[in-house]
Image (cartoon, rainbow, N blue to C red; front, side, top):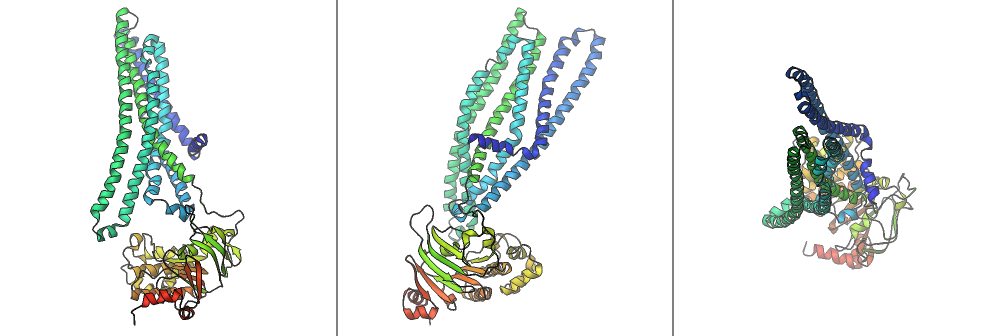
Length: 581
């Protein structure tokens, strides 16, 4: 599994292999330059300065020009790495963001029922940024560090093997030290990711419900809830920083000890005649070349922990298989008549064994207007959600025109079903954009016609910019009735043969309800329609009313038939209209 995980990681480099190769080449070249310059300095101090003054000056000028040229070359290498390398990392991050966003679109309602939006957003933002940094800096930092470490060691061995072995004596200890704290840092950073996702979820929840918070004057309660998450984040960060502090301090001490040992050993051997001052100067120049990659590796390990933990969380989401998918050989849904049948349908949520629906049998003719009523929690919305396969039946089958809905592709199935819900969701944008969401290729004239059918054209023209008016997040600038009419216009534009109205007017005042009800009835004409009703006054004209309870469908008939029967429906109706004239 781990091998496949990292094979997939390196697969993201494939579209950018040329840039990646160039990035590594310039990383290699830049590291090589830093190894060459001290050799030139050694040549000047050990050989050139021993010559006569005029001859030494003639040699120093071209050598100086060579070093300046090497600095310019190193400068360009660093620029290429910083610019093109980061752009490559950003593009890879964008590819992964597209991948996880596309995966989000495939996951079914049951997944989102269990998730917090803030945590899902964290996977797309913070985690992917850290992965992007690892994509870019990881390989080049490793190349630069190993070129400098190995190059320094080989050169120092050739200069003086005793000093070289002294300088590298601490390497095994440093490797053991780094490996030990790497493991602990990885665990701590993974916990940090989970904590920041919790905070994102808390903020998203608070901001989405800010009007409820303010209406109850519960700002202090929300602040208290947030502080708990914030404190947990601080504890998690403290833990990771403790390991990081030990890690940085320890490796920093090791690198300083190397310098001290080289200076002390070099001084002793100079006195004894085994080392020249030129060799010691060379060593001190290379010690910087040797300790700098060690520090770079320190930064890389921190970056690796962030990126690797983010990558694992990214893979966790991608490993979630959609529980509702197209069957093999699923066909396109065409020429829909609208006959719908529930055959021995039972349903329960995955995590519960208790059935929400049990042995439901319904047959609805094309163009029939069906109303579903019953107490809250009886399963009315769930029943209708089985038609477009928002949830999958546990037993039995839902059929349209005699074909099991599972035999249709989900996209074609849902294109033929229009849904108007109580909780209308409008996107940040204009009125035109929100109505056109019903059919993105619709012309402006078709959008306006749909709005007229939904009794929305008049109020839209009264807005500051008409159809181009910006309506805010979730349509916050509109009233409940106006939002509902836009959602109906959206479905008019979609023009589906099957409709589901899920308590579409229950949150409206009487005046708005009448206007919206007129729009709904106009939309329902000649379409197979399911209406989930809270206000029973809205379904008096339904062709058939089904009364749903925990026992299943207990009554079926018209409004007048059910009232005369004096059963469950009559009880619900009388309870709602008790005391009214």
